[in-house]
Image 1 (cartoon, rainbow, N blue to C red):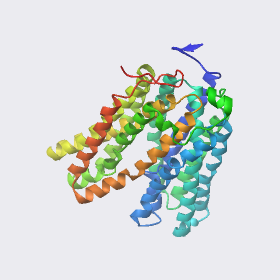
Image 2: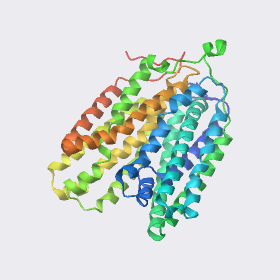
Image 3: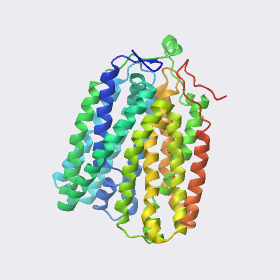
Image 4: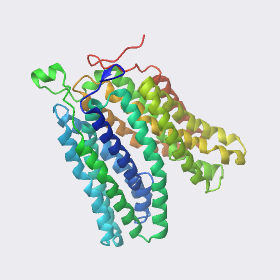
Length: 424
C-alpha cells in the first residue's frame, strides 16, 4: 500500500490509532496540570512569593527540554527505542504522589507540600522529556510526514474541544471545593486520564529500525553536535528560536489590556475563548496544510500569526477603549494559531530532516536548544520594566517577523539519502 509517493510502514493503521489516542488523552490530561494556569494557581495557595509561583512553569519547561540532548545521547544509537519510551512512563505516577499528598493533608504544611510538589514535578518532566525522544523517533518511522500533519491536527482539534470542557470542570471544582480538596481532585482526575494515554503507548508496534549504513557497519555514535552540520537543522533552529521569542510578550498581554488600556477584568474570559477557539480551528487547518503542502507551509502560517499578535497589541493603543475591548481577543486568536502550528509545522519538519538513524539526536539537540526560550518571559519582563509596552511589543514583533522571513527560505524536506530538497 502507498500513501502518496510513500510506502506505508508496517502496522501503519494500528500505530496511527495508538499515537492518536495517546496524543488526545495526554493533551486532555495536561489541562489538569497546566504549567501556565493550574500549577501556578495551586502554588499560589501555598505561598505569596511571585518567584516561587513562577517556578512551576520554569521547572517544568527546564526539566523537560534542557536534558533532552543527554537522553538522546543515551538512546540515539539503539536500534529499538520502544522500551525506553515505556520506561519513561514510570515517571507519571509521581503526579499521583502530589495528589496523594494533598489527600493525606500535606496541604496544611506549605513548605513540605511545595518540596514534594517541585521534586515530583521536576522528576516527571525529566522522565517525560526522556520519553519524548523515543516517542518522536518511533512516530517518525511509524507515520509518514504528511499523515503526521493530519494526525497532529486531528488530535489537537479533539483535545481542544474536550479541553474546553476540562477547563470548565476545573473551574467548577476549584469554585465549589475548599483547598486542598479542590486541587487533590483536579490532580487525581488528571492522573486517571493519563492511563489511556499510557496504554496506547504500550500498545504501539515499533517499526523496524532505519539505521543508516555507517551505523549498521561500525555501530558508532554521532557526535553530540553533529546535527549542527546540517544546514536544514540550523535554519530550522534559528527559525524556532526567533518565532519562539513571541514568549517575550505573551505573558504581558493581560496586564497591557487591563492596566494600560483599562479594559474590564471580565475580558480575560473572552481572551481564553478566543485563544481556544482559534487553536481548534487552526489545528484542523494546519493539519490539512501540513498534509497537502508540507510542514514548512504550516510553519510560515504560524510564524506570521506570532508576529501579528504583538503588532495588533500596539495598534490597540491607538484605538478607542470600546473598540479595543471587542478587538483585543484577536491578539489571543493569533496566539492560538502559533500554539497550534508548533507540532504539525516546526516539530513535524524536525522529525523529517535527519539522516536515517539520527532522528533521536536531532530531536534531543533541537529541544535542548529550545530550552533557552524559558528565559523569554524574563527578558520580556526586564525590557518592560525599563521601557514600555509599545517598545516590548515592537521588539517582539520585529524579532518574530524576522523569524517569519527566514521560514520562507526553509527548504522542503525530502527523505532521500538523508537529505532535504534544496531551494533553487
